[in-house]
Amino acid sequence: MTYKIITAPGDGVGPEVTAAAVRVLDRVGEVFGHQFQYEEILVGGASIDGTGVPLTESAITAARSGDAVLFGAVGGSAWDQLTPPLRPEKAILGLRQALGAYINLRPGILFPALREASPIKDELLGRGFDLMVVRELTGGIYFGEKGTRDGKYGPEAYDVEVYSEFEVRRIAQKAFQLAQTRRKKVVSVDKANVLESSRLWRRIVEEVAADFPDVELSHMYVDNAAMQVIRDPGQFDVLLTSNLFGDILSDEISMLTGSIGLLPSASLSSGTTGIYEPIHGSAPDLAGLDKANPIGAILSAVMLLEHSLGLTREAQAIRQAVDATLEAGHQTGDIHRSGATIHGTSDLASIICRRITN
Ligand code: IPM
Ligand code: MG
Image 1 (cartoon, rainbow, N blue to C red):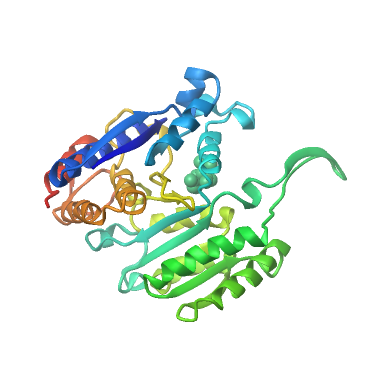
Image 2: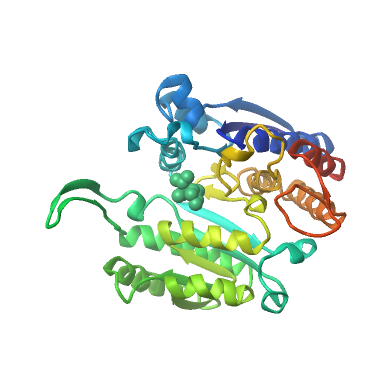
């Protein structure tokens, strides 16, 4: 089969890690007999420099024309002074909106080989963890009304957290469906002791739960959740969150695995297309140095194969190659463990490619 992948390398280490993921896709294509065709779009700072805006209409049209989007990272100090609608981050927010990608899946898995790299004490890691953050991605405070005005104490700014029943219901349904394929536990994160929007969230999640009697639902306030993921990460299966809470908790969870450079994400719509990106940012201090960890981007390509193309054997072959590479002690410099061999981005990708077999 031939598939069309839209690449959006972006800024900082985005181009390096995206190139690594593309090489891995090509390798799996070679082994399993598929052809991947790529079309590159400009996003973020790269687009601002080239076109004056972080995301053009033509980039959106191209993104819609492919089977999926492989996204790198956006942002950097060169564009920090721009007004909000022109900031590089608008590219990813705009793409999520344009593709209707309201479901954000962020797996947090402790690789057995990297146990010692986790900053969490061994006894707290217990049997390790394998959880999934299901984050609502096109609503909440990110997309609510915002602005500046004159307030009681002078000039003030506001961002409104707003959720409709519809938005909560559709993301909750996804979380429960996913839980049915896993360990059948959903923890819904909110701040229902304070926020009206969280009380609506909780009510709708409970309604949805009634349709999934085989899945156990519990609720956790976000402050407690931030503590529990460190105290006992193994207790979680699916964590259902709003846009903002999921943004924060997923970075925290990534660190438990040993490095934020390891974790992928998938942003899915109700169709088959999606945006796949490592959750690390553009890491400008590492840009161009061939030091960034390509595994987050490579595992994002794995999620692309699974969710947008339905190529599960191919996805599994890459996962195994990544596991075997880490087991054999190969890694980039962001992971702290003794006795490992440190490689550059491109080298590590080559080592993973060599381990991909049918
Ligand atoms: C993420 C990022 C984005 C977000 C930024 C770049 C807009 O932090 O994907 O987690 O907040 O969603
Ligand atoms: Mg984030």
